[in-house]
Amino acid sequence: MSKSPVEKAQKTSSRPQRENIKGLPEHAQFQRQGKTWYVYFPYCFSTNGKREQERDYIGTLSPDGSEFRPNLYYVQNEPVFEKRPVDRWKNPIMRQRALDKLNEKKVSSPIQDDIEELDPPIDPNQQMSVGATVLCAAILLRNGMLKHVAEALDRDPKLTMDCTNLAMHAAITTDKTYLADQESTQQKFIGYGCLASPRASEFFQQIGADQSLSQKMAKSCAAQMEEGEIVALDSTRIDCNSNNIDLAAVGKRKDGTYGPQVSVSLLINVDNGGLICYRAHAGNVSDLSTLDDLRTMWTDVGIDQKAPLILMDRGYPSQQEFLRLHKDGYKFLIGAKTSMNIVKNVIDQHNSEFYDQKTYLLNQRCYGVKSSTEIRADGQTMEVHSYVFRSPNKEMTETDALWDRLNAFQKAWPRKRDTQLSAADKKTFEYFNVTPKGELVVNEDAVSYACYGLGYFGLIGNVDISLFDALKKYRQRNEVEVTFKLMFQHLLSTTRVHSSASFDGLLMTTFVGLSILTYLRTQMDSTIPNELAKNSAGTSVISKLWTIHELLKDLRRIKIAYSKNGTPRLLNVVKRDRDVVAALGFPGLFDSAERVAELLSGRHLARVITK
Image 1 (cartoon, helix red, strand yellow):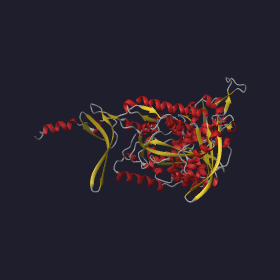
Image 2: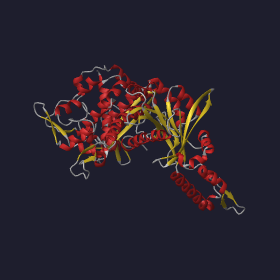
Image 3: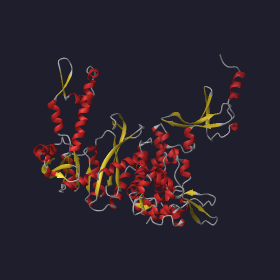
Image 4: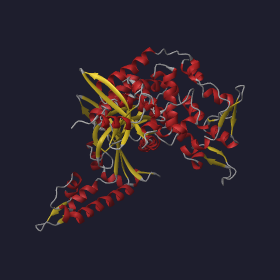
């Protein structure tokens, strides 16, 4: 039955009048679902002759329909109808159109824009925190990262400033970008400041459209390397929550579970923590499989010309890669599993020597045997040196762990007996025999054979050095693991973005922010005067007084203010602040308000990167 004109009129009158709704954003529409009026931005488009619509829901109306009530997306991102973020498009055609527009803007924008646009007008009524941001800006000048960013972004002042500010924000703040708007507006970043979350997403998409971004950064960083540096390579996997990132693939996490991931590799200087390059690979690719791509990139950007010694962990070795690295001119020292023939042969052929006091390495708590052998692969030969060590403490720890695993499996056998064993359980099962009654009995020979190889660890390289030097150098590889720990704790634990280009842009910004944290970590071993210190020198190590983020948070109380005639002055600076920045390598940083203002000005950045 059709509705009467009266019923239609009643339905029409129940819809809130747009002009009476307080705070309703321009272009927003609203539609009733159940008892709730939902507010959204409608995006209508046509593809293949078919008219379609996508919506971004931004809130609801109050029960009486008189007021707009934003949702979490609207509060955190402050979206504007005309500037929909690229990653909000579900339709691939429209997403590509939006991306093309961003690229057009990048091409059409002249690099030498009016420098005056990089800085906001001075506000004499405003005080902004500068202690942490100016320290980060000084670090990026000192470690050369500001110029590396500029090189990668074709010396565009605005893009360089935006990337630098986002990197500084990531290093300083304890919150994610989309939760830290208030924190970022209270601090003075370079020039007109740090991009808000929606603009940051667009920025990542824009710079990440250049697929050679990581290679450009690597080339600039490689040019700054000294000859013969000791560098370390490692990779880690980052959880990925988007199907739109091409490199996302299901891989095994460290906790044994599986999920979509992206693999990220880092090459760093182990002496000073300096970052050299980064690279992303599919999440289901092994470390060994990434080495060929990394080696090619290193050679393309000139790292081979610096003749570095590269330290790698046990995930990378193979005889083919040994030969390829050697052929390309790289020196290497790589961890090797005891099951690798080169290492196993040394253990078998020199076993008694690992129990002789003559091979004991003083104060290293281990025995060591060095050997040389010739390997062949791909029709080529080369000599490699193996450095094999036996640690009694490691042997006892690993033996206890093996027996704990066997005892736990044997105890759980009654409920596992009639089930499908996991891959790990199948390996453990090999240490047992099954009696006719179905009970498990330990195979002593199998356990003895397994224990024979416990407590050993090996290194393989094309460098001829002493056992002590090999051990000392390889232990420096821990620096790259600490660097990844800094990244996960402070910068990046998941991909957070929803396109391949955005992920590439985010990775670059993370790389820059990470350089700030690695610099601080190495310099915080310095000391400052402390009257309360109990040592005779009256000093304290900075890292004993603050963590990195505690230090940066403490420095935020330092603010800058301007007089009516535009003269800057610093507030809340005490002697301890000057001592700290001097120990970090920046004496006098807080002595001049003019210098602080200059370091945080867009004009200064533009001059630096165009030299």
